[in-house]
Length: 276
Image (cartoon, rainbow, N blue to C red; front, side, top):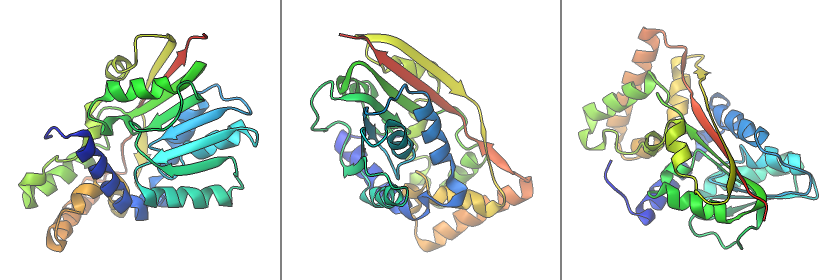
């Protein structure tokens, strides 16, 4: 993948996920909520806590965090994609959560004082920033002494075997786009995730890899996943004929190979900051 500047990476991520918003919360794409909840469950959140969730999407981790900190607490969700945030606000209203707010913003340009939050969360987002250690340092700055920073990434073999079929089909119609946008592959194992955390003031760092699968009820389920994830950025660059060919190749593979699930491996990291 060509090296991008921070501005280019920001623009590409915003464009991709604004486009993916229409399928992001489809019933097939429950993995967003599943891993958001599991990340929050790893944190020691108390009633009244202040929480920041960057790259919050439609609230997969922000909403369960808001439920956990209660009415006296506050959760702020930040994302580059305004269309995802619109959906998050609707979900918060439907759940009666008035202690969560969603803002458009960039994790590297957050206007918050140091040590402002009891917990900071970043699920499936750190890999969009060209300099991941820099991003982790900025998020760590916002954690109060005794607080926690949770970063969750995809693990190895992302959505295989269907992932490889998708990219091979793209290569057949647009070789220039072959694996052009797959930043989640930059950090997929515990050692790599551990390495981006700051060396100072970390009292404890727990990093856990979790293997899993995500079920497909039909070949069309895989295409719904394509539409509601980062693959969408590549699809948006294809004309109608090329997109139809990619879709046909993907569905044919799922059907003929009898694929009924894909890899959905993740890596969780939670760092606890030493008390002052």
